[in-house]
Length: 104
Image (cartoon, rainbow, N blue to C red; front, side):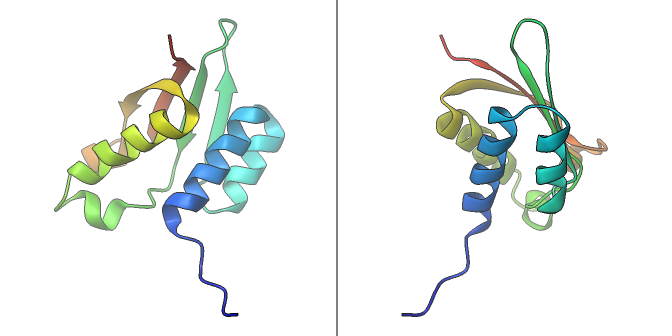
C-alpha cells in the first residue's frame, strides 16, 4: 500500500496540539523542527500565545486572504478553544501570532 504525504493542515494541527500540550522550550524546539520556527508561551492566566515565524500558506494568502481566516477557524475548531489572531505575516508582520484561550 502506497503511503500518502501528510497534508500541511494535518501537520499544522499535530504540531499546534503538541505545542499546546507541552508549552515551554521543548515545544518551541518541536515546532521549529517542522519548519514553523514557532514559539508557545503560557501566561499566568493559562492563555497560550502561539507564534509561527514561517507561514505555511503564504503563497496563497496574498491572492486568497480567506486562507488566513480558514487557518484561524481551523485552529479554534481543532483545539476547541477561542483563538484570536494578534498579527500575521500576510499583513506585513514578522509572525503569525495567536492568543489561545479556553472556550467558554
